[in-house]
Amino acid sequence: MRRRLVESASVRSVGYDVAARTLEVEYVNGSAYQYYDVPQPTYAGLLAAPSIGAYVNAEIKPYFEFAEI
Image (cartoon, rainbow, N blue to C red; front, side, top):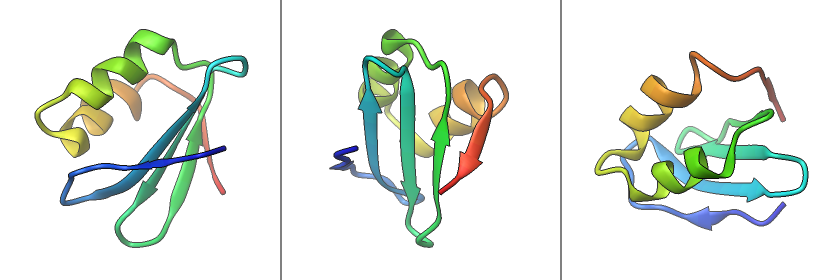
């Protein structure tokens, strides 16, 4: 999955696979996670959020299953 660099103190890059509805988040510490069954509007909200790290913590981590990659 291709990730794009983002402006964030805690997140380095994000990617999204539309067909699989999978969000990938790479953190500045080098760890990366895939979040499953994420709707496309949630990904769009992430990209538009004033704080990407806060959005991940509030809108993604509590609601979607994930695995470290």
